Length: 124
Image (cartoon, rainbow, N blue to C red; front, side, top):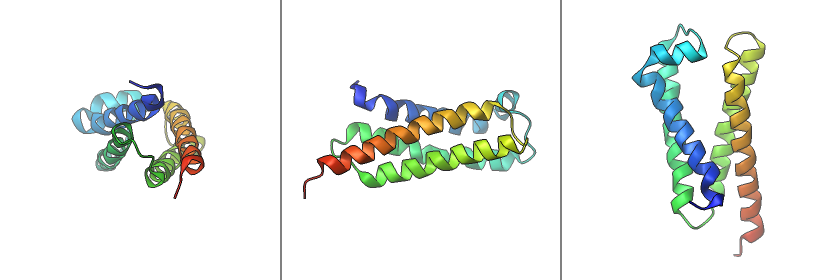
């Protein structure tokens, strides 16, 4: 595995794990993340996160840089980070979501770098 592929692979695996986990075993998911009343919503978000893992893995196998994939991943990560921070500060969700917030910010930084690097190396 090349170093440049490390973050997309980690993010892809992270999204697969956090996406499937509440669907497969909601009880253990809630033991870590806290009790939820809208189980259907937790499972829906899990399913919605899964396609982003495909985008991450696609960047590993595709040799051409793709700005659209970077922008979509940035939007996803920043959206998840914002929700984590906002609802933690509102005392709605557990502190464990701050870990997710930090990871999402790291992923966002990677995709911003990826996007910036794409602009510098693009030749029409």
